[in-house]
Amino acid sequence: MTKVTDSLGFGSVAVLYGGESAEREISLQSGQAILDALQAKGVTAQGLDCSGDYLPKLEGYDRAFIALHGRGGEDGTLQGALEVLGIPYTGSGVLASALAMDKVRCKYLWEGVGLPTPPFTVVKNTEQLYKTAAVEGFPVMVKPAREGSSVGMSKVDTAGELNEAVSLALQYDAALIEQYIEGEEYTVAILGDTVLPPVRLETPRDFYDYEAKYHATDTQYKCPCGLNAEDENSLKTLAHDAYKSLEAFGWGRVDVMRDAAGEFYLLEVNTVPGMTSHSLVPMAAKQGGVSFDDLVVIILESSFCRNNS
Image 1 (cartoon, rainbow, N blue to C red):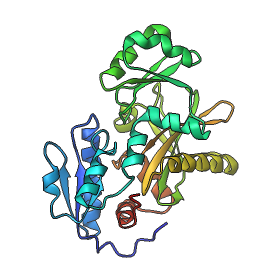
Image 2: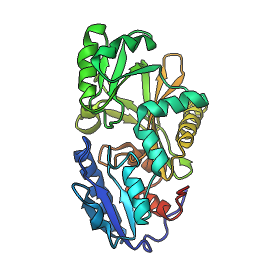
Image 3: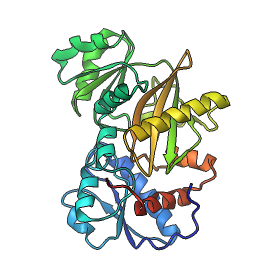
């Protein structure tokens, strides 16, 4: 892991946040925390709310720190625009961002390279629900194919609940119906080439939903995660393999479930994870000996050496 020795030399930095996706409010919080950290380290940084016609406002900046969650920021479109503008940026490039944001294509890729992910099917309207035979009974998770922060997501225990859950997901995108894995939930942050200590998530709610992530006071985060050394190493290796399979870069977070038999299953990769007071990457970094302010600078440093191929 890069050791932070000098926070200067970045030039002028635009922290890109907000936007118009369903994750706008969380992005504003992440962006403000990142902006505060950069300024505290002496970096010349300004925040830019990426709403409306914001690209012309990037003129004059030397690099960009992407804190824009969801569509328009995490799906490759912003990354492509920054490459056209010649502005170095943090995080993954166009391909990895697009694949990670599209949970369906990501799962197809993982199946193709032999990485474990729960069985699933996809429907584009409620009339296609007969295709749920692709999953092996209930419960299932229903989620929009291209949203984050558990937006539009539901746990479904019976066939009678399925139509409502799919209708909710379809308000955002095609609906991914995924076999529910009963067991422990983990998230693994990756910073550069370093896999940070995994975090185990515990919530009394049906699953780790939007409320549990950002508002609930009874969500518990275990870091160290409580796994024995062998199982933790297996989890970290799987997360790293999943991250690299997308050619992700700079930083990210991989979400994983573990069933009662001890098998791990990949859920998704986040290429612009949250950086709020409840966020998991800063928590894992702290356990690994990296402060929030240093974490932000390390991520920004990666914009110097990103591989745009």
